Length: 365
Ligand SMILES: *Cc1c(COP(=O)(O)O)cnc(C)c1O
Image (cartoon, rainbow, N blue to C red):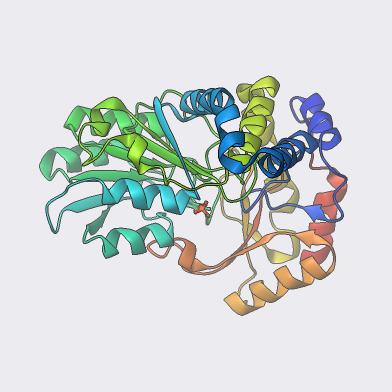
């Protein structure tokens, strides 16, 4: 298959260390570039040379630029850094005054740990209607539900952790806006992967390490002004006093690399990679691709042949790892309202090659 933008695949590979594995696991943690690593290392050295607070003061302008770039990618202007995506949603929702027992609407594919958080905060969780068996939101049915019985909040994962299905975030946010319901977006799997720049969401949060391939240990939260006014404190106060400054600078480099490649070109190539991966692997060894083949994401999940248990899938993932192929075992706990059984998740980045998928195909047969 001819993938769009072969130059991006070459640049991605040339810009980072030669992998010692076949890395098909960007949805867990992307491989950082030489430049990202160098920026982190340089700041750590400056912290040692000057003291951490003096070093931080010297990069204030650079960090302001990183926040501005992230605001553009996430589509909301006020940006704070956190330690992770999980951290970001926790600080945001704890600052949102809501009546006890308020309802939050989520898709059936909602990320398991988010459900745990929502319930711990006292929210009642209800689900958004979907229009097919892979969990695409039924937007007209959502609009009806919002009109009949408006929730206090909608929480949406444009891409979940358990499959490569992409939600029409613009349409979902549009339906919520029309009903006057706020929308918080979990972009952990979407940032650097699918377009978020103009969704109009009230708050969007994500993590550095996945599709942007920034450093681990950095998360980000972007808030729109109207929603900021509803919080019990200024957005800036949602940022912890202590944080991984070097990692934030490294994320800034990853964002700059993403912008230089062209986000639209990156998305087009990643979508092409998803379609190609699915075409190559569907049916191999009796494994079935879960997503529609043309779903515009690079994440492919494979359901095992009949009779396989979740433990069997976990064992296959370990066997692949022993063989030097890094994938994810995605158990049903990642989306407990929707997933019934474990899948093998493949999340190649721009540099994937035919030989990589051939290694997976060999292991599946
Ligand atoms: C990875 C992931 C998260 C959590 O991100 P962290 O940075 O590990 O907290 C949240 N939601 C989804 C959909 C994810 O895939």
